[in-house]
Image (cartoon, rainbow, N blue to C red; front, side):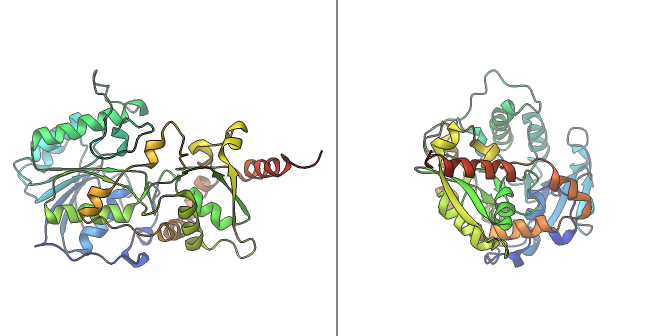
Length: 367
């Protein structure tokens, strides 16, 4: 994740959502991770509500953060023993990719903590055209995939990790399956493409067609709700996605209102037929990050229900705020990050966008 200054961290001051009142007494919470992307947001939310934190991580990602929070340094595979002999009310596992690591942590801590919160992903589902809820079909795990970084194995390994946590601490696990996580400190630049593009202004190419959608969740909303689940001792499995209205037009219009566009070149959304774009070898997440067509083979990725989480207290801010704060963070990146700005990122290049817009207008021109 970007190594920005502490001032770039998610802050409740950048949201109209005030922290919910704490439920019950302060908790002692162990966070496995804590300084990457979702971790700092969890730390901010938990501290705002008076909880006591311990972080366990390697001290390699953003080590300058949280000098006043107890941190136990160690490799997950070799140094879990450093957590032995300690008690916490809950543990939040933010970086469990492999089931062997989740199993080892849960087994070590099962007599030491009362609640294991595992951050999973909607990528555990067998995503197709059908709508998704917590009862939807999961990816197959037989034969068990190797524990490696191959993205084809990511979803099945997360399924096995969920099961490993539950097997070690039956009835005391909360599995949270977020969609794409957006907001300040996002290392992927997927959602970030949109506020950066909207700020540049001019004509902004957007695919058009029936039921185009964009689902994501602001990292600060996710973090606040994770803390709420601990306070309420709420167990089970929950999808965590937003926004309230995920239709593409509504999302981008909200983002535009949050960003404001360029004073010299105010932005204007230009909706272009999605079928025409596909024939022009344009489309997909590479060109339009997070956008899913209503007739796409992976339609279900943008039709994930968060009804259970919403009923259990998840609150979602407007995409306008996510876009505004993401852009403010992006624009505040230090000089050391300028190379990242210039590197190829998700989304259309200005040249490709201009070419497509020109071809779109010329398709029916006389002659």
